[in-house]
Image (cartoon, rainbow, N blue to C red; front, side):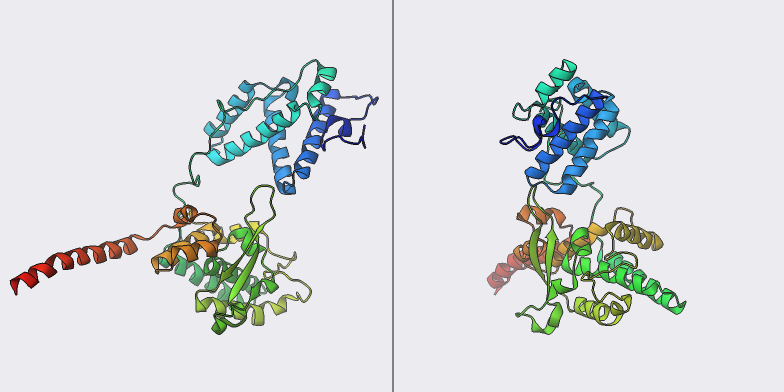
Length: 375
């Protein structure tokens, strides 16, 4: 019964009402189980987006299996996950995400504290079992599971991207099109993501007030630091915050022009977003991906280069330029240095120069004593 004291969030007696006839008991009990699982997830402080995504994944599995949870078997899971890999070519991390969702739902459904197994036995004469085990689930054994082809921009590719983005601004402005301001915004977003090594969502969610001074670098004025408030969160935790310090003076010029000359005509006096949209308070992540794809295709760049490649480039180029690895790690908000090293893809030119310096030093060290002996 709803309102029972002492019942766990998501338990059967909080969701199902005693004495109420069910016209379609299989569908209604399944929906009630999902509602209970949703309530449990929110009680665990999981993000609403995470709860909703996992619910969609469980619904997709149920539709594929064609039966309800009290009839699920391991074979249903094996067939579906094999189909995801072999037919739909889903990545390892995607398949594991589905497995985590189904496994979590099964664990919830069979937990005696929630009473769903008992309800299923009462209605259907059967009860759910755990169908995802260590035997048939993908293990997370690698530090990184992104596609091997993912990489940073080279400096030449990055310059080509920025030049092309600037060209779109001038082209639209010369044609008298209003869209030149949106094109300027998009070019500024790309440059900002690279200049501060921010992820897509971190960049998208920046507000005007997130840009501030760095007392140790007054020459950068009001753009000496960026306060990232929507960093990648750990499970069941709020977004991580960090402050990223400005390292390249050109970034200040880009931001000053955007905030003082271009952004005001958007008519956003009451909008705190750094990157307002013509139709919404701020630009969407989908728009950023779409614009990146357009520009990348316009100059024939490698399709593997995406918005996140700007962050990879930031790490790589700082390391190539001799910045301290710990400083770079703190700038991008990595908890472990090993994660930063994964992002680093130093160019062949950098490695060649490093090797040459090392070889020259070896030769100098070997020749030096011989010259002393000759004297």
